[in-house]
Image (tube, rainbow, N blue to C red):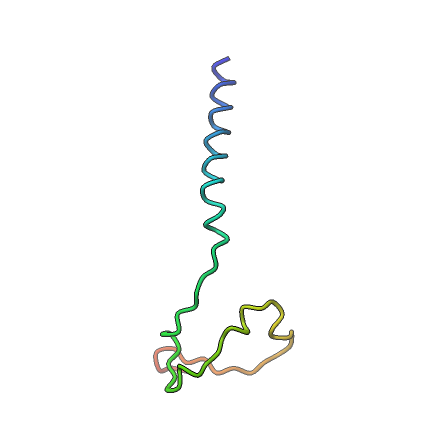
Length: 70
């Protein structure tokens, strides 16, 4: 009997935790434009990247600069 109550209590606890956490997972994350080191940052429009399949599959050449190193 004690085991059954404990099992139901554990399931209830886990269910409550999931109900509280799942909505937070689905919240969209906003991109921080301050990470773009460009002189004309205000004219960059990244809204298109929020759409699925905006960039078609394929091979692309990109330049990555991190802390001044390519």
